[in-house]
Length: 150
Picture 1 (cartoon, rainbow, N blue to C red):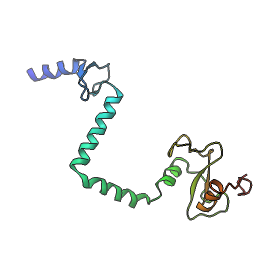
Picture 2: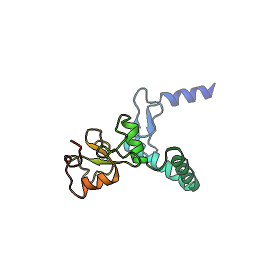
Picture 3: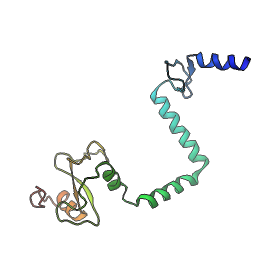
Picture 4: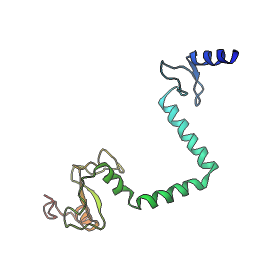
């Protein structure tokens, strides 16, 4: 009988101690599983949990990586792009090559340091080109008209 009272009082208590910064916070109704005072503390807790796991199991990352490459191959950037845009061209939009493809940003939508930014790599802001046409476009200064993209 006493155990049921303890669990009931625990559930009714709205005060909790954050597991990261140890501040006392009041949880709102419906937040029964909340153990962090803020989103930042929740993110830090998840990071530290992953760090501890990989420190205790250093071989697991190698296993995950091998499984990932076995499952999807080595071209992760194009794979992620294809998953987001399944109707994207399957051949170079300039010459028709289909063996190896790159994502080339159109003029006005260059990355400018935004490494693999999702919002800057949308279907309307990029060309799908083979490496040769991509180099001609980016490094040699060929225009979209010269490559037959317009």
